[in-house]
Figure 1 (cartoon, rainbow, N blue to C red):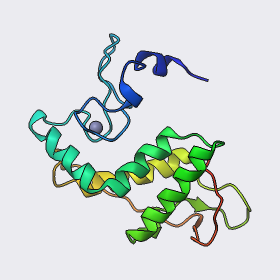
Figure 2: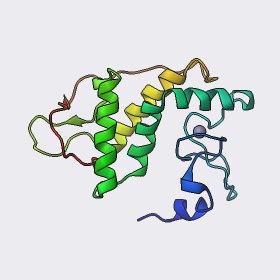
Figure 3: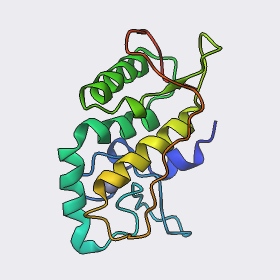
Figure 4: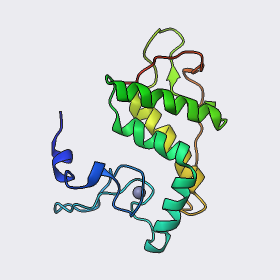
Length: 162
Ligand SMILES: [Zn+2]
């Protein structure tokens, strides 16, 4: 267990991003001197004048923002993580994004895409959705090229991947 990161940001409610109202977890800091300012991937380094616009878009895209939050926030093995996982699957399906569902391996009953890989795909999708309000014009979306099967929604009871 790495508690160092948690200790530094313990005073931030729920470890949220420093941008006011941002629903995401602060995971990035530019400071090497113990700053308590942690930012999500979208607000990190963003133009100050765009912070609120980014936050507003995140709330409009809450189904995706909360998936990004929950996958990062909930390690597997708890009732909360299982509930969050199933909610994410419902939300992604409801918003016609089955491509963003966690990828199970066809040849395993459990196991599949690593949680970090899944999170990266979700963040990439959110970054793409936010691109009109983000400063960066260098974003280059890369779609996953196969590998693993898209989950079928009929399978229930899955927990967050490890
Ligand atoms: Zn943020």
